[in-house]
Amino acid sequence: MNDIRNIVVLTGAGISAESGIDTFRDAGGLWEQHRVEDVATPEGFARDPELVQRFYDARREAVRTVTPNPAHEALARLDAGWEGHLLIVTQNVDDLHERAGAKRVLHMHGELLSALCAKCQARHAWSEPLIDRPACPGCGEQALRPDVVWFGEMPYEMDRIYAELRRADLFVSIGTSGAVYPAAGFVRDARELGARTLELNLERSEGSYWFHESRQGRAGELVPRWVDEILSIEG
Ligand code: BJW
Image (cartoon, rainbow, N blue to C red):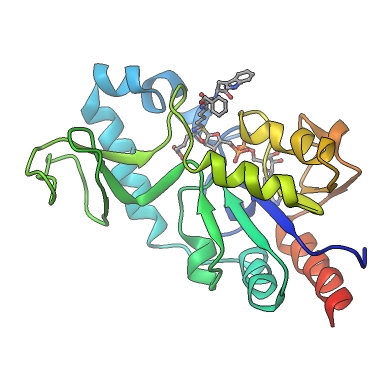
């Protein structure tokens, strides 16, 4: 463990579950409440934009009412204390990593508090509803959509993520089912490139086989314990 300098952490919906945000694939999760084809694909948006805007407007509103939990706080502590390279790649569209104080965060599936203009492609910080089709502050067109990555779209900053995976000594996956690519493939990529791999999740994920070590439990308990371990090797 003493030769670890460069860390990539991948987080998923499970890290925000204890803050009160629904996951996607657990019992009672978002995909039991909504058809994924309707609300998380460009085709669904083209068919029924109002349904999709309502879905994301409600989630944007709900995210205001929740707060970071001990797992987000522990990763922020890691970010502040770790002198080597660190990148927290999150699949989550909430802003709980940032609100806990983490700085080295990349939102590969976009952000609820951002709007993307389908006309000029500009991204704008956004906290209001989109259902009433406000004008894009850049080009003036009423073409704003949620700034999230739907199935069939390219996740953000893949080149930067793969560059960090190439130099990672340690890859840690937290609270993700491993059902959605390319994120689900990061463990295999990181391992084949020489990183040690660790999973912290309520249950074994779909790609659990690829991890050197898999710990099961709640993120709010596992993550602070792991951060204590990793920071103790630096100090
Ligand atoms: C706890 C806990 C607690 C609970 N403590 N743990 C290869 C093979 C097959 C298909 C494909 C492939 N490559 C691409 C595809 C197609 C597709 C895909 O993956 N399809 C699958 C269905 C197979 N992927 C795409 O289309 C992606 N784009 C793409 O691939 O572009 C081309 C490309 C090619 C090559 C390189 C790069 C790019 C885009 C995917 C976009 C996903 N979008 C969504 C919606 C985002 C906006 C929104 O939030 O609404 O992203 S879908 C949804 O799933 C969301 C999540 O980020 C994502 C992952 O979910 P996550 O986070 O894992 O949540 P859950 O609910 O699944 O799991 C939660 C876990 O937490 C569970 O395990 C629980 O046990 C655990 N848990 N409580 C710890 N307290």
